[in-house]
Figure 1: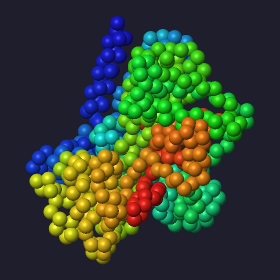
Figure 2: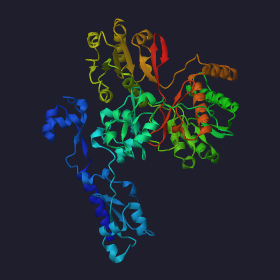
Figure 3: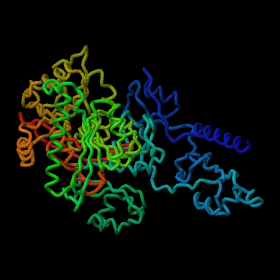
Figure 4: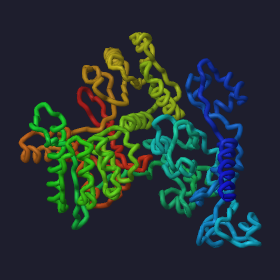
Length: 623
């Protein structure tokens, strides 16, 4: 009983010290009416420190904005980030840089010292009773945690407050580093991010435009100045000129700039089919064959399912002609969770290499919960909703979310910015998105001056547009809003301005709100937007598919038929070569781009997004 009381006390102490000592930085939410000076006075933090930690606020603060502030309770000696916690497991408890470990059956001194990376003498010095009684089951050992060798120079990194809907991937991409690098900087985010977490990110000078002069390279273990110069075909002097810190030595984990002359474009997936490959595929779609009558004229879902399936059949025919052996089983989920669950219990499904479907997210979740199918790749073919609540490693979301569309559009804007005047037009409902986008834009040193136009009583005076636009420079106008009338009004006001005023209009999503806007206005403002799909009807690839589809099904393929072809062809072609989807590069099919990344939930998501633009009345792909 005493043993359990002791562990309870240790656990309580661990909670107390964790809360009391905290991390190096904390967050503070600005209250209505507060100013930078009043916050400085109340928190007793100099204004220059607040500005240094929050460079986007300048001299003004907005109500509800999250500020990064120093944590007055921070004690570096007790910060868990200073220690290697990967050694901790089971019922171990951490307090003040020590782990308290209960000796388990069959453990030896050698096991323990090897696991916790200390010598036998150090272990006995911290636990003198071992000298008298030796190691016994149930003893509680006090073991110093191994300290992490500091690979990072604090001056090269800054604190950053995690914003709503941000992921490790989006933050890493924003700052030009890998997810692994971000996790090395912030070990406690390996299990996920929380809104308002304060993490370390590279200082602004390390944020690199991927289309500009430099790329970022993370120094790996064993790399030297000589090996880096050979790897990137640069002289050692060139490396040091771009990274003066290299003159002091090359250390693992350093982030260095590499001139872009040796950086290749993002890798492209090559269609190379392995020899004698055979794949087993299951397809689950809501054909609704249980209905008394199949009304193709009025039942949209039946049409979508059938078209998707027909497109998939054309893909399989094409792959078979190239030598791939495909065994396919097709199931009708009937749009029912119960039916889907019953299908998932079939023993034959565990032999499948890939399951395409179900189409609805709730039904997909039923299959994902079936642990017998954990080793089967599960494809979500249509849904654009957030899938992160489904914790399944082999889940693939084929349609990027709206957040991804926005992220890629913003990334395109930042990469192509070259001293244009930036104006943001926004409604009064999109404050969170406005704050998120402006803060990310201002990470670019050259993009600090942004004009923001908001409606008064639901309306922006046309004169405001004229006075805000530059008559000499190119004007980049970013449209942020959810109201259909507001969007239509903004595009119309820009579309009637004189041609001598150069305008490029960017939207972060194009949905039904744009459908009734005159294309002549969109053409006038060089409208740019992100999209899941893009079809070039002039390519031989597209013409061949349409010809094969018409020959087999006597009709013109819909967008869902093209989607069925694209997803089936791409996933089977990739699996014929390797099961590592995230390491194979980018591919483009008839209407879809595929670029698979690992999501923060551990699943896989396709982040293939097109950036489209009006060139006159013609729609073109610019990325």
